[in-house]
Image (cartoon, one colour):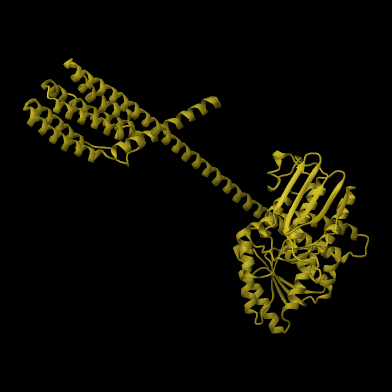
Length: 599
């Protein structure tokens, strides 16, 4: 069976379902006044019948009135439609109400033949007024069901018109013509109202169906996004564990081989590990930003002090690609978070260098009154208009079908977008394919301050190393991690830096080690815990319990490869310092020194 046939059947089924829903609304509208209309008609028949009988004294009117009363009683007590009836039964109920009102109208159509031949003009006028009023009421209450509208209006109106025309004189012919004109106008108005009501109902249900499909698509997109987040979190965590061990073993090996010819291989190993760790850190940044665990700390920032380390960081990359990198001083100050602004500009500069083959990249800051424009311009491949709305999506890269690793993961600009929202710094983009791209970050300006704020230093820089060596490291460290390789790698690294490290796998062993250390008079100066421990044990809770029970408040450092937004938010709320796997040795030692100094 062809796809077109299946699609046609699907459209036919959808159209049939839509028609049933519309008919159900029509039936419900008519039956909404079913009871009160039937009782009103019954009362009117009795009153009207008594009036005309008192004037004409025609015994046939009594039989007519009895028949009409009997029909009204049947109509009132017969089973009727209720809102709990399925839509598939709507045609049956529509036919039933049409048959009943047609029967009532046919019995009513007899009465003009009892009244008109008497040539009693007042009674004839009263009859016409009654029938015209009934048709007007029917046009208002029965137009949702066209068969019911015609079934009720036509028999009684035609009965009156024919009875009038049958008399043959001018007055009755005129009244018959007037009745015919009124009937045509009434039916035309009723049909028009029926069409308008049907069209409005179809539009309403189509909109509801579109809204439902849109809701399903949004829900499916959200589920896909959640599944992607869970997959990235699980994959990132599982990759970080062995990479963390490799980084620790590699750092210990590099420290031991320093000054020997074999150290070059250790350096190459660490460069590869650091490159992989940077990719994982990029994915972690997305999770941390989505989790809301990053809180900006706006303060006055001197852009020249921020541009200097950016120039140092990317000058080597530009030279390697034979590109010109110009980072121009401006003397301007802005209000922002220096660390997050540094990351935002780093991603923009890194993206510009990756997609520029010849020419160069220019970074400038311009004073625009209450704002400052930081502009990153490149002479790269540019961005086509149809791709401009996608460049801030995760993992989207222009002209990189082979997923060249040199171009990264395609997450840098998605981080820029998140940081832009977090900091309140709008990002604008203009590009011409083949001519280059221009990104602009708009920041609030502040007056120059007394002293320049020192910009953030890249991890592993000489400044960090000096500060780390100047700080006192803890003499003894207790590590709690359920993976043997990480325990061995961490103890090897710490011992290579003259730190007495003791590693355990669970909370019970850690409690025993703390108790024994106090008994020997050699307490631990720091407790390091992995977030995820064996059998689902929460390392944060376990670490906090151990830290409190250690007597004096024992500094706690959490180490994790976790990327789940909910868990990252929980870590942030705990206030416990945290490092993310794979942990760079310099960052680890610096954090340990800071906690030891604070305690």
